Image 1 (cartoon, rainbow, N blue to C red):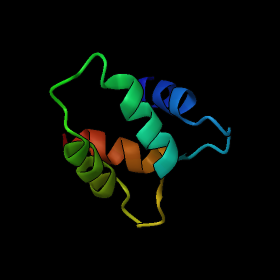
Image 2: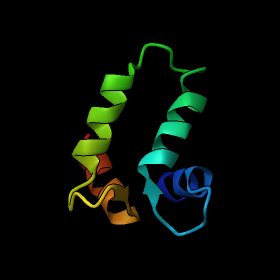
Image 3: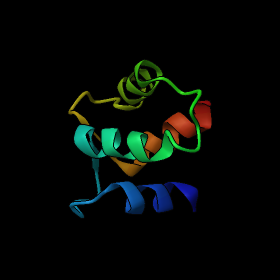
Image 4: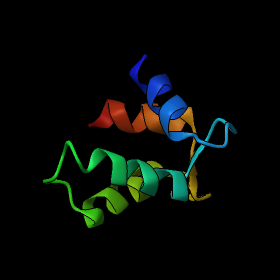
Length: 69
């Protein structure tokens, strides 16, 4: 599944969440292949995905956001 793969790639500390620092590092990596995405857009996506506003994304939040997109 794409979401699980994303979490495995982005979750560098292995806690099953993608925190803000990991999200930002992933942006820096993906920016090479998607130069049209701005940091502001990337930040807005994180804020939209973080439903419980705890500063990290879990699998359910990512799946729910993906279903809306």
